Image (spheres, rainbow, N blue to C red):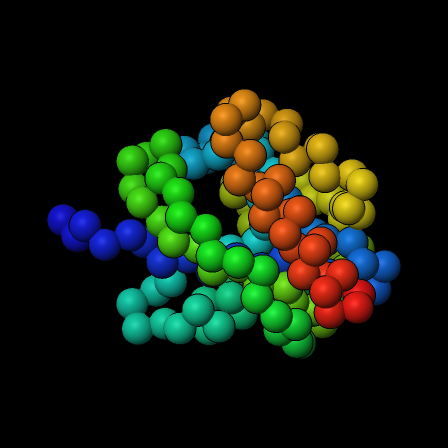
Length: 149
């Protein structure tokens, strides 16, 4: 078994009002069940981060990435499955009906567009010491401000 961490790509999708897209993971998911999360997942063999970003956005929402606005950060964590991960997160814009994402059945149960002052919602069902998704959101909003959005 490899000791290398799993590589992941994450998309912080931005709407025209400067809000970010979050979706709730199904309560049946092994990793972060019933928690809010960004769009993203593991890189497939031979796939670049940018390719994975585009694939995951389409798989999880039905939308297509139109612009990669810039990086948010790289995050290292160990999931409750015991696997180490390195996740590269990016701000993106998408094409599609932003009011109607096509959530992956069985994987996600609802979605929300959140403004910077609404990210307290992201702590729901998270371990008190986790804070990962909230930190990613805070850094995503900071990145938005830094590029003038």
